[in-house]
Length: 235
Length: 111
Image (cartoon, rainbow over all chains, first blue to last red; front, side, top):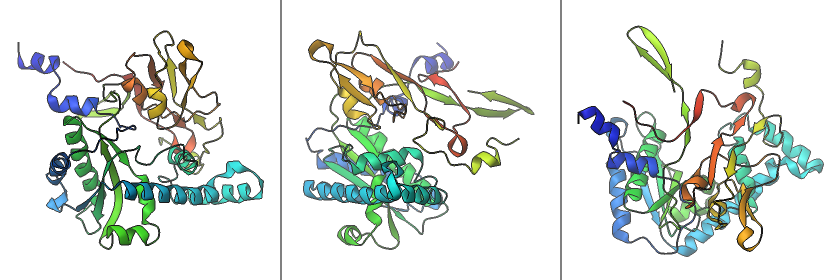
């Protein structure tokens, strides 16, 4: 068997974790042992970053009451946003919300993309749990003074941790809604988030219920391939 | 020629108008579905629900014209009976138009 065939016949262990990893949105109550959480953060610590600036700080939250309170506060904030932006309620407030949404969406096209827009509504109506019942949550804070594009570095660091977690048989889900906790001083004080740090993302961590991991189908993306003075389009 | 014309870039589609939205679609094989409800519990868009009683209990998509399916296929991954699959991606018109995508495929190997 030549090298090419060997590659063709097998997924490497790393590829298997990457391809089978799915977001876990239902966790068992069983707490993750501390040594596994520490080990996952080690994977984050060794992520590449621009100029080796490592523009991150980790918070580990395993306090049930604290997680519940965060969830409650994010729901409250979603309710406020929903009142200002959801025009489907009709009436004069609905019309005002429509105008506001049309205005705001031009400044925040990513945050107010139709998908999170609907998610705000789900969250405000408690149809959706923030951490999906995960017993451990890892926050990644970004050091705003990082080299180049610190947001990208934070993403790379988080992906390292997520893949390490799945290779250890755990489940994870990226939770970006925690960004809403940056409004007001309550959580900044409680969590000690102040300049130069900023809450960017959090990763819910726990043992999944059922078997959520597995390979699935996804759409392909166009690849423009430049070689030997020619351009090919691949999918 | 640009990928999205200036006129369309300035138009922001709304999420509640069928003219602007094609939602993801999942198809169920109700012969295989045993009504365990795992897909309903984990669906990030809350686009699925259970209908029926006893042995006739099966998972379905919401009846709404616009369903909040993201086509993430998490339902397909968690289903132990291989009874569900999504092959239609969500798309919005104008500013949020999805471009440069091909067909759905499982992870591929090349030679």
